[in-house]
Amino acid sequence: MRILTILVVSALLAGSCTKPKDLEFIDIHNVKMLKWGLAESLVGVNARFYNPNNQRVQLKDADVAIYINSGYMGNSLMDSTITIPKKDTFDLPIVIKVKTATAISQVLESLSDSAVAFKVEGKVKMGKSGVFLTYPVRYEGIQKMKDLETM
Image (spheres, rainbow, N blue to C red):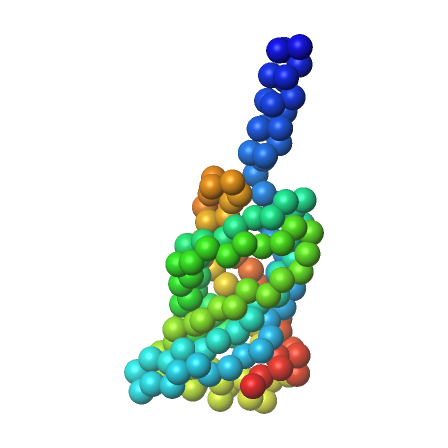
């Protein structure tokens, strides 16, 4: 009986320690200016993801750089912990710190485009049950301007 109990507990512990699958990026939406400054501004955006994991996971300590049409747009830091629901789509609010002059020039260049190429590079800690691993974040995609739902 003890051996069976040890095997069951070991199997449960091994299953709870498996590496989570990567989150699947869907799109960005709800772009808005949070703070306008002469040198630096803050832009808010919601990134929509799907969590393919069978368990909730947590994200913390994200540090990513954002590029629009190959030009560096800004950087986003997340120092809080966010719990992500299992097998579900969720919005991740992101605040991007941008150089105001760069942001203005990127926006002006993109006004006539029907879509923009964007790239995100960085790292994030993702885990469950207090065990976190650092994952690289790297995504490149095309975002249609009409789908941004700006406010």
